[in-house]
Image (cartoon, rainbow, N blue to C red):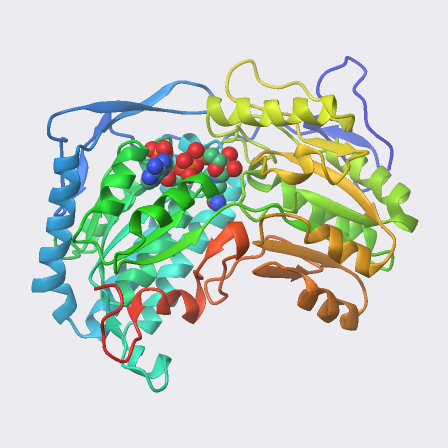
Length: 506
Ligand code: NDP
């Protein structure tokens, strides 16, 4: 495939190739926003009511693709944290812990169905607030969020059979702090198993992306969930820490940066609070010379440019077997040049906006470090929108293991390409990272897949695919990527006391 250049110098990224290789341009295909209603102000969601924070304070939430304001959101105080935890405790003691699992399941099924019914609304709000392409929020985030509620609804009345020899008990009140890269999906990963296990929750979304959490709060009311079972509070990181430190919390689930994860681990050390941490990653995606290259190219692209690379398990380090390095790189550059970067609400967009000005600055700084340290940069010749936090999909060659771009989590659309000769060398290089969240292997040989999977220090290893998620499958890491699992029966166990004496988390 040859690189398509437009005669007038306009973005190649808005072009595609027809089946016969003839270039053609995509017409704009904007998703309508007429059907959604973003309120000018959102209060904290406590006891099924939206109420202002005390004292009254707000902060602004913007659309990262336009930099336009979307809403004012309540900024919780320490007293508000206490109110939310008190509401969750009351709901746990008086209602939720007394309901049979089959009744809890009904609420979860109802929530799942309402998310499906309101999926268009969720997808558009998610895209406007996070910057991710509408085709991703529509086809990945929202359906998977509903699927998590369906899946854990199925477990709610089967806890006694799920863990043979144990007597599972709910933990109590759970504090959940989530990031901005998959706002609704992370909410679902956290809330669905917590409720199925019989806990009540206080959730703090990221400050840049609270809007689908507040839309979810409307779903909670629509589903008639008893007041206090789900509480949502917004505010800066320090409010997350107040929540984590609150003495009446039994379990904490955190997804975010390794730095904050370590702070939380220190804050709860010595307490009986149960903790799961899902932190950063620097995944290796390894392509052997017998891999189907065109299929691998799609996996590499999906691995690092999906969600602008703002994915903890992104395949940000590509290891290519030397004998196929050149053909693979040619194909990769050609494919990169067909990615359409721009308006996240356009259904043809592949790469949307970075979530915040701060994150964009971090990505730009790390890319500059790659150039300064001597790696060779390739970026497609696309024109970025005038406003908004956009960054060109980028790849680096000539990367050495010691470069910052090969070591640090960039959390942006930036790929480092490295090479290897033998499987042993691939394993050694892939494991040369403080992280251990995910990895990918591309090869025709099943035996090699099993050998690589066993040798790779990563919580999740994909073979001949990448970034596949399913509610039935556990997800999580080790080393600096955290501990504990979300998803599947492992994710359910994380919200239960499975000890013999019933004292975990209390
Ligand atoms: P953070 O870890 O700071 O944010 C994640 C969540 O934690 C947010 O809700 C945040 O609130 C909250 N938080 C922040 N500080 C504290 C604290 N001291 N105590 C309790 N909660 C806190 O991630 P950033 O948004 O700063 O992103 C920085 C880097 O982290 C990214 O570049 C990326 O490398 C990594 N990251 C990894 C993620 C993953 O999925 N593993 C997700 C997001 C980021 P608030 O938004 O109000 O600050």
